Length: 392
Image (spheres, rainbow, N blue to C red):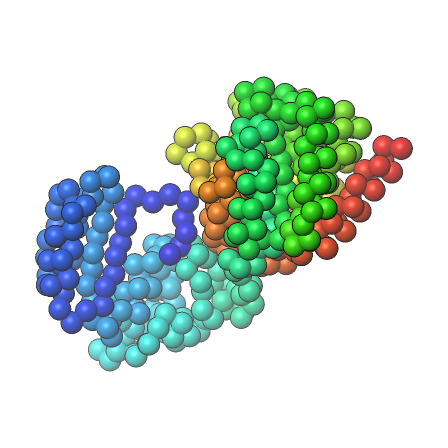
């Protein structure tokens, strides 16, 4: 429920009048490899894929308290129990008590209300400033999964994607999106069949033709341009000027020291053709650590130059880390929730990005691709005009 990036195990909570029957059915599942704990209200198993699962059974009256407790986080619950204690109350997984008397709560919201707080959504229960917001009654209206109007950052068979331009467009439309920003890899990405200028011109002509043929969907001409070791992008300015938007990303020399990598990204941010920075920290969850970066300096530079920061929704990345989203919001940096899709199925990864955006406290107003296509085109046109003025 908290939408953390990685998990160690799974907790399942059930409200029932017959816990022993529930436990018996749980143990009979074909996916159970071994049993580590077996009892009348708690059973722990390991699945055939190695994941540990705990099943707990409670009564219907206990469920709201247990639901809150087992959702966590531990740090959040410690603060919440402290608030209860300050009010001479006791909170645990079985109830909220005034002495021996149970304070009835029909749902989680009632628990928070009883402790002088507005409801805190599960994604934000990390003791990461959420209590201050809940005390003040200024909790943001978190972005919903239906808020995105379109998608940026999608690859096709022209580089290292598995679907054609037309297939990706249809996939986005089928998901209810109104626009799709195509961003195949750039010419220095030879490992990914990056596009040279002649190939770009051909792709852009195809996009123009598709846009002319359809009125209910828009394709945007973009590129994922490599940020070279010195911070420059890997096309000349006249090539970059042909795109509707440019995502600038690091794909090489990940081990640069902090000052050098920070300056590399800062130079890319200062490039007037850069619309967004892709997968900012370069992390791959459980596989590669983030670059050594001065994130505060990067976000301040993005704010100064009006560069959007990507929230890469690929579940292996989820980058920028949600812990930096609140600071980005404070600085007025727009976030774009991008799937980094290399297939039609990958377009659906935006769901993970929205989860992280909610965890970081973002509203729809903080997210670039929650805007309709008319606003997107106006924004991108104005940015290209500024870039042309700076170049000329």
